[in-house]
Image 1 (cartoon, one colour):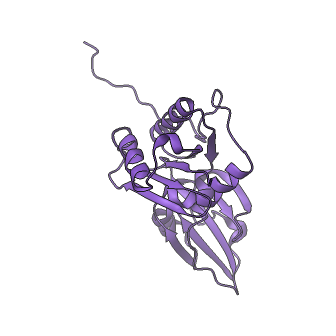
Image 2 (cartoon, rainbow, N blue to C red):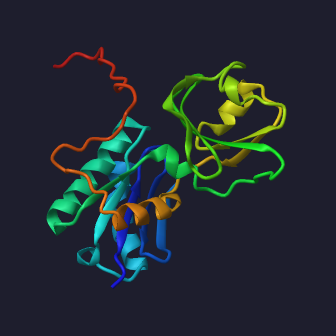
Length: 230
């Protein structure tokens, strides 16, 4: 029987859930309400399972977008995924959030140097970014990047095209000052991780749930309230 995998994407403001098998995405449920992960995620999981016409005990694994991204969103996704995996005694799969964005459809030019740049907003003029070739091979490992006219300098050839994906794309286009930038998508989706989740399951690339934690890149920005405690 073909395995059923639940995929959770909570690394940005979009909360997204999908169910896949080896052949296709069976259902996708997404909330466009910003940062409503705590309130929406479990309801979306129930909805996605119902639309795929399965129940939670039919799942073979849970895959999560493991970061970088929103600290709170990643924590909610990780905790929810672990809870399901423990309860159902199924494995946990972690998937790089930026690599997932590289799997969207890109307007590639066969006569140009095409660079796929996945980026997640990190506030102000900064993004978390990774550069890939069209076959999803890493050219520049993921890291926080300040956006300016010198960013991604080694990829500024005269015949280069930059294909931006993620919620940092629009901001980046206005700051990078490069002649040929194409935005492939501005949002994340659990459905982008279909191929990655399928391959990880077949290779049994599972996480140790006792030690797994999301990839944050930077510590959370925690502020102290000035309000009196009593």
